[in-house]
Amino acid sequence: MARRPAVRLPSEPVLDIFSYGRGDPASSRPFSPAQIAQIARTVRRAPEVMVKVTGGGKSHGAVAAHFAYISRKGELEIETGDGQRVIGQDATKALLSAWHLQLISGQCRWNAKTAPDARQVKLVHNIVFSMPPPTPPNKVLAAARQFAQEKFGSEHRYAMVLHTDQASPHVHMVVKAESEFGRRLHIDKDMLRQWREDFARAMREQGVAANATPRVVRGKNKGKTPDPIFRAQQRGESRVLRERATSVAQELARTRTISDPARSKVTETRRNVTASWVRVAEALEAQGEIELGADVRNFAKTLPRALTDREQLATQLIEHMRTVRPRGSQNRERGHDDDLVR
Image (cartoon, rainbow, N blue to C red; front, side, top):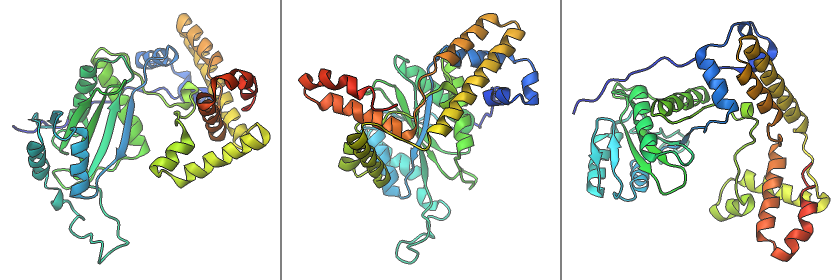
């Protein structure tokens, strides 16, 4: 089957609320319909998409292991960019062989013995596309399929698998890092941000409310890391994370509070975010969008409390202690715990 050509659609204009907060020249222009829709999705808390690069194999064996993982050792169907439906371990091996990863530029030149300090090239990019429940899984797969056709088309080979074994339906996608024309795919933060917006658009085209905005704009802290100390120890994760968690735990035990030099910066950022949303509300009301302007003002007033990394880690540790503490002592000390992070 012939591979479909890449289709690259123009992106919708994205609102930069910080520009409005600074009073940049662009803020004097009326909001476009697409920007108004984006504001409404954000302040009315439409579900946020997740697009995450989870790594990528640097050897044929690593790529094969990832295919085995996402296909559950051949039990789940793999869908490819040229429309194939691959199922079973033998068929997966044949698919991987057809990608000719051993011919990728730089792969043959790298040798652990002769050039131990050389950088081994990445053969594929592993990407996850996810939506919160109760999004229909088939809609997530359809949106991921549309995204891949637009972004990669005939240039990069790719394959995907839908997972529904967790609350959030998600698609694992493997993209060959080198295109059919020998050009490498480099993913940076700007590209990833654009990918989130494009995947959100694809979800909306499937009839599912979806949004893609920066966490800070929504007043969100970083995502929760459950049981940080114990997970880091048991799985051998980052030494930096383990040391940071240990430091926070020791400070909590010693002073029952957390101090963080980053507090002033976080406070200033939150002040700017709130002021920017107020300015957006004023501009909307001047444009006749009275109801949406009121929603924006309420959104700005009800943003969750901003926490520094150390404060959030302390909050997670406190929550962990509550879950492991005997029930009798939980009620006695709950009032004290609420005052630990101030």
